Length: 289
Ligand code: ADP
Ligand code: MG
Image (cartoon, rainbow, N blue to C red; front, side, top):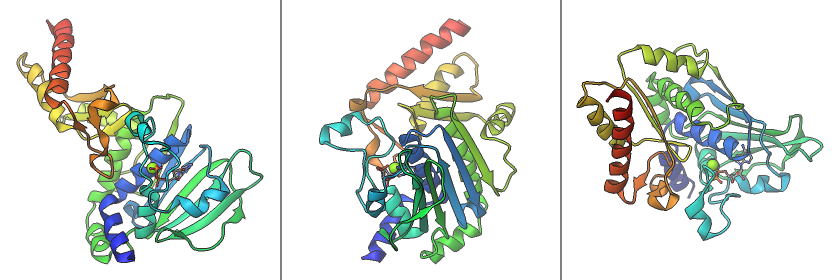
């Protein structure tokens, strides 16, 4: 059974950057205003996300790494109006099947923090009191220790660092609250002063930057690149930096197509693309004639 769970988990969390994205989204869901990410050896040795969010109730420690344990979805209708990033209760469970997970968490009303270690969906020993400020710190160590082929393959490639770096670059763009502090430390292939520095650098280069956020969530949506490029090309323009922030009625999209929720399906694809194209055309005409 563990092997099956491990394989499934390995698909949900195919790469260290998927795990980091899930942890950061959990912090945002918990109302955090400060999030720190620490990555060692491209996330394979350890990846850690610390937040000052609302914390996890001590009673819930037993459950957090259990599959389909989510505190965010209460009834079916909620699925249509999700305002949180998570709702499947799959991320922490998956993580505990491919890494050694430690959680330290304190709610504002608790006298002290509690911590627990998790393996294969289960708390390995009873939670115990620990030092810690209000919020949650989740550490995943030895990622893919039980999937040695994958681990070796990744250890040999510097690509993982880059993928983490790229993913963390878009996170600050998606944050609605300017007050949110987002800090990224650890050893990656390139020294990172801050994610915004990377963006500034990208603007200067010839490579174009394209990112899409739908209802505040960073998603891959390359089909939108085409209509935008087309509108610009007819005027001899080229887009070097594009960050699209779209508000789309939840009933018109399906974010649930992929477990990592990083892709979306438009339920009325042609109409939505048409609307975006028309709007973009209008804006570009206003600016460039
Ligand atoms: P989901 O986000 O889909 O609910 P996860 O597996 O990502 O599922 O998380 C499981 C549950 O653990 C969440 O529903 C939430 O109750 C709790 N949790 C996870 N991370 C945090 C965090 N940083 N702060 C507070 N609660 C958290
Ligand atoms: Mg989640």
